Structures are given as structure tokens and as C-alpha cells.
Image 1: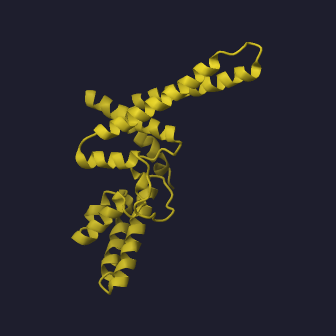
Image 2: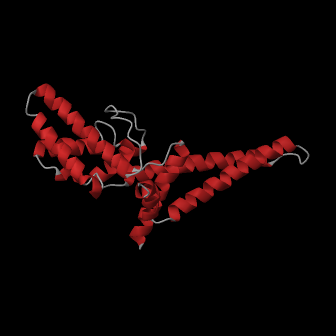
Image 3: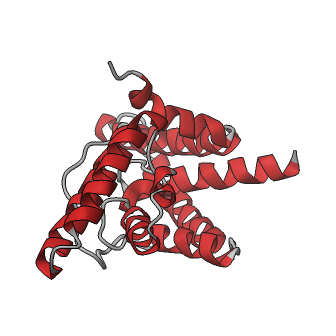
Length: 210
């Protein structure tokens, strides 16, 4: 139970950090479409090891047949010459990433360049999974949340003292107050929800496919 609560808190804090940064909440697959992301890395390993099973984990069961077909075509073409090999590999990368994103209800907009600036959160999370230590991620999230919480609270306190007849200043206070209250409420709800709830919410579009 303690472990489940810790995981839920971590997921909630991650979602809250995303809210702070003002970007769309897209968990680990936020960099799945980059040439140095985990999906393409898995594709390269599958081709090197001659084992398509290494990429099947990244797609839905219904897409396995298409991936296996693309894999066999890639293996056949890449034997021709270096140029054909490069083109075949790119075809396989694009197919895998497209199906991976479709399986999570996300659009495919092409492969992105390697070494793209992903901000601090995603690299820290990847490093945590690789190293087995959550310390850096926890420190990053706690610091970001504390700073954002303090800023919002400070704004409320600064605008709280206004003269009653001053409607304009009063509205500025209300705006700061509502923003602060909603921010705290969102943090609490995200931290209290089970990790599975966040995943289910994100995957919802995939289940509605016709």
C-alpha cells in the first residue's frame, strides 16, 4: 500500500510539473518520436539483433501484424546496398513510431531530430529508469512545485489587501485567488489518484477508435 501511494504521488507530481510548464500532459512517450528516443532505439536494436519481438512491446496487439510485415520488408531491402539500408531503416522507424503513437491516441507528425531539447523532466525520468534511482526526479519535481506554489501564494497575498470600493483591484485579487485555489486542488487530485487512472485517461482515445 505504501508503494502504491508513492507511485501515485510521483505520477501526480509529474502531471503537476507538466501543468506548471504549460505543456500537454504526455508521459514517457513525449519523446517517442525522436530519432534518439526509446522507440527508435528499440527499432535499431531489433534490426541489429534480428528479433522483431524487441519492438512489439511498443505497439498494440492489433498492430503486431503490420509491424512484422514492415520488419520483414525492411530486412529484405536493407541487404541491397548502404543507401537502401538507410531508407529501409527509416521506413521501419516511421512505421513503428506511427503505430506506437496511434495506439496511445496521439497523432504522428514525423520523426524529430535527435538531441532535441526536451527540458529537464524527461531526461531526468529516463535517467531514473536507467539508473534505478528516483532521487534526481524527486528533487526536480519538488523544487519546481515549491517554486510555483510560492509564486502563486505570494501573488494572492500581495493582492489580498485592497480597498473595498476598488473593484478593479478586487478582481485582480479574485483572479489570483482562484488560480491559486485551483492549482492546489489540481495538485492534490493528481497526487491522490492511482497511477492507473492517469494512464487510463491518456489511453482513452485509443479505445474509441472505430
